[in-house]
Every structure is written in C-alpha cells, then in structure tokens.
Image (tube, rainbow, N blue to C red):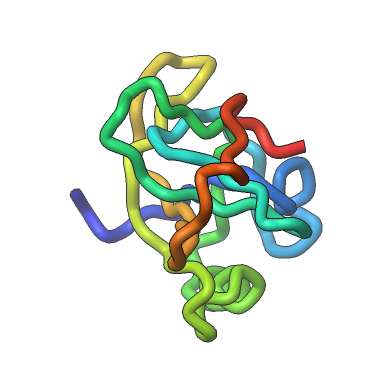
Length: 122
C-alpha cells in the first residue's frame, strides 16, 4: 500500500466539521473494519479481523501539505502517543469501492464494555 494519500477517514469529533480545522473537502461517507469505543469526550478505534465489525465515518480530501497532517496529528494526540496515524482501506458508500485513507487509531487497550456496536459515534 502506498504511503502517500491526501485522504483521511474521520469517525469522531471531526465528523461534519474537519474543514473548519484544516483545508479539507468532504468526499464521501465511508466504513472501516474495526471496533469503535466511547472514551468519554471522544471515541477511539481499534482494527478488527472480523468483517462484521464496522466503524462509520466520513472521508475528506486534504490539501497536500505535510503541515496539514502535522496539525491533525497534534489535534489527535499523536505526539503524546494517545493515537497513531495509519494508512488503511476504507470502503466508500456512494461509489462502492475501497480506497487508501489515513485514520487515527487509539493506541491503548479499551474495556469491551465501552464498545459502540453500532459503529457510529454520537
């Protein structure tokens, strides 16, 4: 998988308003094969091997600058190790295809009692 993309999948506090934080344009709704957890003020995602585990979110196209990704890394707590940014496959809703997108994955264990089985935060 290529390490270059200007697409990002958001599933939490940035849904519906990523473009208010950084230069970005909404592209489509998407789904990621993972587990969504309620962490209180924000959600977290872990990857899953089970194809029935789906996280729902939005795909945005970012401007191509590394500066934009650094801003998002800071916002998501990457420097402190809270989250990590990874390139993953996201299934797009409208065109029924999978694309490479950045996602922020939670870097710590979470109790399953905090899992959001619907895959949609708020």
